[in-house]
Amino acid sequence: MSSLKILSQSPDFYLIALAVILLSTKIFSLASRRLHIPAVAGALAAGIILGPSLTGIVEKTDFIEKTAELGVIFIMFESGLETELKELRQNGAASLAIALFGAALPLVGGTFVYIWAKGNTEILKALFTGVTLTATSVSITVETLREMGKLSGRMGAAILGAAVTDDIIGILALTAITAMNSGNISVITVIIKILLFLIFLFLSGLMAAIGRKIAENIILRRRVSVFALAFCLFMSYCAEELFGIADITGAYFAGIVLCLLDVSGYVDSAVNVLGYLFFSPVFFAYIGINTNLRVLGSDPFMIWFAIALTITAIITKAAGCGISARLCKFSNKEALAIGIGMVSRGEVALIVAQKGLDQGLLDSSLFPAIVFMVVVTTLLTPILLGAILKKT
Image (cartoon, rainbow, N blue to C red; front, side, top):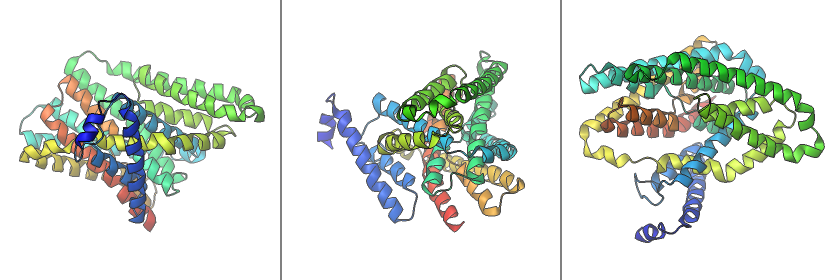
């Protein structure tokens, strides 16, 4: 361990860190499959073992963070490329209902957990705790569904559509709470930005339709994957910087736009190799590397608060999404899979929590409990989803 700490001072240590990440995620993914658990869970476990929670072999660096960000962008871009537009259109109303119920119940549940734990009436802080539970990180679910061949179809389309809608609802809720706290941010401005983003997506679709003949020229086929990847990164940047929407949402819609082209399968295969070999493993490991669960051990009350918050996060999200899916004519097992598939919070909840810290809406003492909730829901989602889909 000490030798690795000494080596970490080397400017080229990132090469060793990447080698350790790639090998460990692969080994643990294979072990997970042997145990009939989705490989994603093994990759996440590898990150926790490598991170400060256990061994601390690999430290969080800016390079690893940016590489992980590219990894989740690639995952969502591939999801867009593989989306069945017909299924997405047919399940638009169901996705909206799933997202609304899936955001409302965790918001209420998280608010009451804070009030129960703190015993005070700081309503804005209580509401913000609820907001952190509304977020959904669908990248883990997407990878699990793809691994099991369930991404295409009605259920996959409903989960993806609900996750994107959930993202917008979360942004509005976060902005509303922040605006009430500081008065510097207008909710109307955020709504206008979201509407402009939808117009931007429509114009991007028109551009793709106009350039369809050029893109499908066999001479340009190999170059299309380069153009498509550049388009994905451009859309991710615009979503985040210009419209205040998560970059992964921009990447997903970039894939939606390009899936209209006949070369989308070729682009998907090219991006899949790049993501599978390098970027996606780094992303899954980074979640664990970015987590330090040791801080919970010093405060018994914080352990109970973390457990209560985690149980609330799982039950409210699964119940809200699952019940609304059942009301939308999904079968019992499909509704259960949709509910569980929306449980993972991932990096989205961490980003929301960090914004709360910056705005004084979240006590620093509560941040480890949020991290614990994120880790448990992220690890639990692929395991439970795999078990449900195998029965289905």
